[in-house]
Amino acid sequence: MDELISRIVAASGLDEGLARKAIGIILAFLQKEGPAAEIEQLMSALPGAQELADSASGGKGGLMGMVGGLMGGGGGVMALGGQLMGAGLSMGQIQSVSKEMFAVGREKAGEDAMGAIVGAIPGLGQFV
Image 1 (cartoon, rainbow, N blue to C red):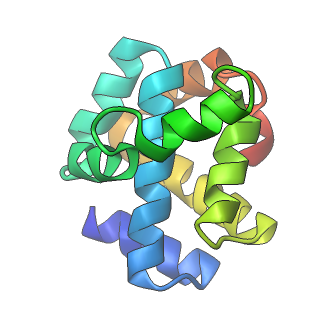
Image 2: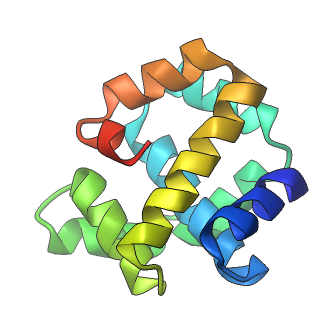
């Protein structure tokens, strides 16, 4: 996880705390929206990922659930973007974080797993 955080800080210019928060938000979203087997593969490949996802979701949907409810359901990638912007990221930073996170995911969990995740979530491909 430290490697991922360092790479995201370098790519996006975020401080470490905000990088951790952004990663957690994205991981929580992926767990909610993505294919279970591939998400499990990704989470297993990134030690500490589950803790970040849990902290972002509050364990029971948290802010994620509220944003989804405001958007009229899951909200998908648009809700994710809104949540990341609400945390203080610009659109450019969101793209930097997403690209770096998926690059690390491909290195650690494999291209097949990450391709399946991107393919299963409508609109996600534009960010990665």
